[in-house]
Length: 310
Image (tube, rainbow, N blue to C red):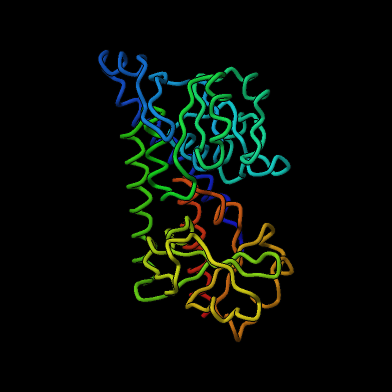
């Protein structure tokens, strides 16, 4: 599938400009300026912490925190990433080019973080809880509860930590509007969609609580019913691949332009007649308002291509 790089660039730039404009409008008065310069108290998973009113040197430890910060016009000085070899996700564009790597999400590098002289650190209790005191010794630190919580809630948390709650709602409203556009354009109501990630001789199916699953449902699709038990995903063996069938099936790959990057079981057109390979870097890990818009633009493009082919 063709990669919609120009459109991705436009949506990232547009969302950031929107956030910056909102921030500028919110700081026109002396009163607002005083509010942004003063410190604030933020409630989080580890208690209540005093943070700068307008943090300038932020370090983030989670993908949704990086995506949201950039969308809000606050470019972190450092970020823990999923893979140091891959680095900052490409879909974030040039705005993320100055972000320094500070270890991985699983193993943040305390020495690198301290060297960045942050005035605020944002992390996640479920991943980094045992390191909280070490982070707090470097800079004011706030933790969201879990990366598995609804991503929109985590966006709101990050925005609150940065003092930009109103801007976050504007970004989320923009995302919802884009969902409605895709749904209307492609008449998705009543159709099913399933995202699959092949790995380790298994197929991971993503449910409605997951980032990508929630995007598909936001765009009007329904995830095929099963006993999700509020889980983000479930695994099925190749032998049970039929459980992944849907009106449209999306299969993730790190190299989506390479047809050999996905196993033959999911390229079987008799089993999956409407299958599309999509980029894992944002369908799985692009959690946040920018990643969400990227997913929706990609979905829009592949649905258009599919309709044209038929």
